[in-house]
Image (cartoon, rainbow, N blue to C red):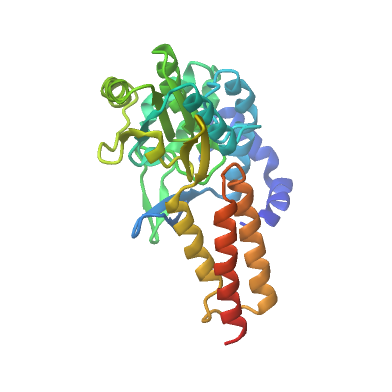
Length: 323
């Protein structure tokens, strides 16, 4: 069923759907697997797209639960929360660096959304949600399975990315980590599963990492990628696409070199001679991408970058037009 078929469906099946939900008899459908490429070559992000009806039900649950959990969530959590953004998270990072917290633990939770422990998540949810029907329905969504390559695959762990409930459940679980970090008095910023803990010395950061890993693995049953989890000076850190540096004793931000490389690769794709776009179509795609990119990196010092990129891009566009 497509989105435009939802209203006619509800006109015919609304009462039965409501009855099943109230009686706890509704059975969600498996999600549809969609894979999108990640920045790392050869790796993909696995999404689980719910049916239109399940998306509607999940959205209704999320809308009711979000205001309740917003009162519980940490001030240092910024991802997938109303009125908060990546730029807010970066501003908080800059604030901590200006206070002298210049060593960062860049925490990498291995395949976080794919490895969330269902029992632990349900336990955490049950502390707040007292209606057993809601808990049962969320549990059914977690266990609904996935359709992939024409076959059904069971899901015994993980929260499928792609549905309205996924961001909320992800934040509910990692709020446990937030509370533990706050209890220990640490400075940190979290955007979804991108967590950075800031300390005043390398030794303190290494000690903090050593002590927080057991909590993550033994209490939350999550996996820390030890190869990708690093302790480094803030000037070596890439967080949410940004890099950091100090100028006249104050923290400033720039576009990280890896983000610049990714941007140029995308612009190359948009200006390659081999595609079939008309010049107006190409111009519109470039305009949309550039507008979104500049808006996202608006906190970065990038005057020089913009000048050199503009010259580089104009050269590529001329080459396309004069082919």
